Image 1 (spheres, protein in one colour):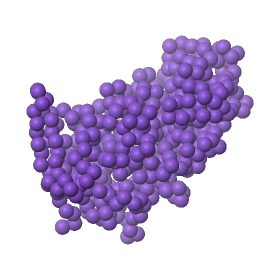
Image 2 (cartoon, rainbow, N blue to C red):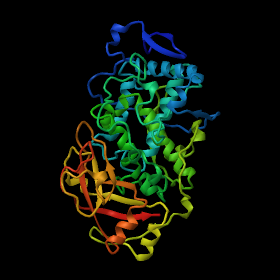
Image 3 (cartoon, rainbow, N blue to C red):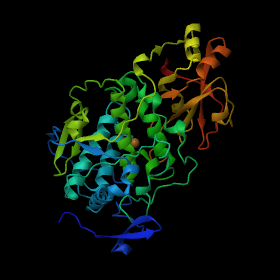
Length: 456
Ligand code: C2O
């Protein structure tokens, strides 16, 4: 037996008109924290040296719908939820040295984003395809161990205003989606609109800035720094807020399914995926074979056998969006009168910052950086400052930042036009680190970036 199997007793309790389902372990003592299998407490960031990888060409016969965690909480999905939980439990119960164990799922992520890794999966165009591959191969593992081809990933639709806290199916202790090292009471809960605003990302005109290029940090994908980073950081301090080891927490996979759904939604909004050429990503499959997949083969989800129950919708017709080029001298952005008039209209405006370098020089433990038009003193409450344009965020690894710039797309609708008009068309953009409550911890410094433009 490659893994030990623990049995669940499923108990249903009627509380008024509501049926509540509890999962109780038979061997509760072995599961002291109420968890389902405990990965080694140490930080395992190793995989056995694999043999020659075999190519894997995804070509699933059926396309199944991945549901949101909210949909999965509906009583009509109780059986499906139980199957999902049982399969997650089976992976969490594998011995930690098994190459498809929970520990090794975490390790393969860790390896790819260790600071010593010069091909970090978060900072180039692997970001979206690599995580899609991780979810896909884990789905295959879940189907095999759960002995059920119907099992599929669950997504956390945090962009939905009804889903701004941990999804309920993940919360109860004593069931496989529970995770003890998960902070739900930090100052970043509940998530606010600005932290999970997908509109600026859906409006990004090309993949280079949305998802990165073949070269590390050229630029860093903007999809890394917005809702992606903010949802990780909401759990600080806890495993989710530790980039390398975040896949320990089962909710990681629901979070990344939603990032995957963001990618699908970006394409559905009318944008084009690049040709990834012969770029590959590597995973162990459910038969413990070392595989490679061409990133080009990960572009079409239907080949991977899934679609999403709903997509994020862009609120603007992306076809009508234009790139407004700015005249730049250092951090001074000059807007032509025409652009100002346009921005003063009702249309949306998104400020796109490619490779913001300021964070490289700011406090190593800061995760949020406020962007302002004009000066901002230390101690400013960013969101109530007149010139506040938005936040750029990163995720720390074991408390340290990965050196390097960040990219972002900020929703500046209704702000930029009047700010620019009030300043004779010239805005001095600045950046300051923010604390968890959104206050600047130092005076803002002139913005330094590879490129800044407005899409509107
Ligand atoms: Cu690979 Cu959201 O982390």
